[in-house]
Amino acid sequence: MQEVGQFHVGDMINVFRHGSLVMQNLGETSTPTSGCVLFGTVGGAIGLVTQIPADFYEFLFELQNRLASVIKSVGKIDHSYWRSFHTDIKTEDCEGFIDGDLIESFLDLSAEKMKEVAEGLQIVGEGGMKQECTVDDLVKMVEDLTRIH
Image (cartoon, rainbow, N blue to C red; front, side, top):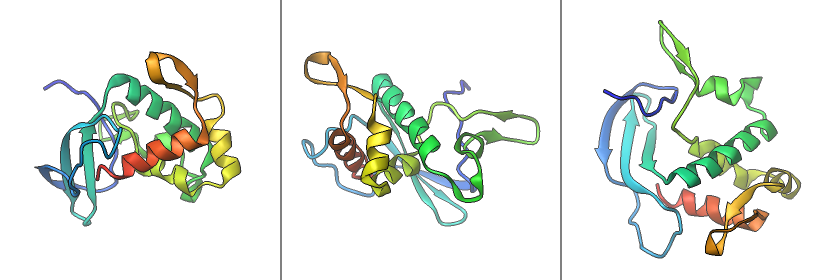
């Protein structure tokens, strides 16, 4: 089986189901996702895995890295270490996944921190041209992402 990604969830996943917890209304969101799979853990957590286009992944990956440097975690555990894939045999960096919880935490930041995160971030605008991302662009995008689960 070919590995396409690895991600530490923090619990034992014991069930997968195709679907979503919310009804999707076309036109309600501009978030390009496909193939939603829900998972449940032994501890009662529910998560969602979905596919996104490569360019959107790259954008969210950059946003995730910026947020990880701005938001300090409990216990000061580095985000990349927490999400790394660990077994008794090996430890490998997280790859192929975006941490939706971290992305969603953008909405909890102060206006000053939001601006710090958005500064220099580029999005693909109308006509396929890259443009400077604004705080409002990020808020809308993150709010759209919260609606897919």
